[in-house]
Image (tube, rainbow, N blue to C red):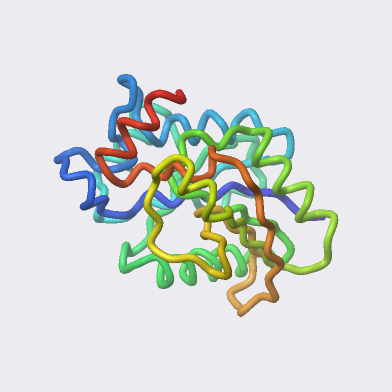
Length: 212
């Protein structure tokens, strides 16, 4: 028996937005960026619980989760509770280190859970896409899945990407089993523009607004 858990990475500094507001709280149409992501996760038919990874880099994001959205602290009650929304403190040392830290925490409870990692800056990725990714993952045997988007989609919308891998760009959505080991990875290539709008610059924020 396994659980499908969304892990929202919201501990980054978000320096490229040149804003005093922490990136997960950056307002798009007067609504915090991360709220779009959380709403999309809530509409998924497969995701059972949400855990937002926060860090000392983004203290206001944690406050927002606790005070405005009434998220609970991730602790021993997570598995037995009916509550769906949690925050988890990470050290905020960097993506790889935080990821390893998160996997270790989950592994100590169960190695069978499925964690879908979603960056807090992907507001357009709706529940339909999340469920399509999860259904594909469940239909194959590898423990890990990385979602990529063809460079053509980025070029079509004039969006920059940091690196590509055989003509595809990592989307910021990955699935891992709840085990802190190197996991054999399946690649899933999806040609959806919703996956390319990761809001990390002012330009992308302005462009994303048109699609919300």
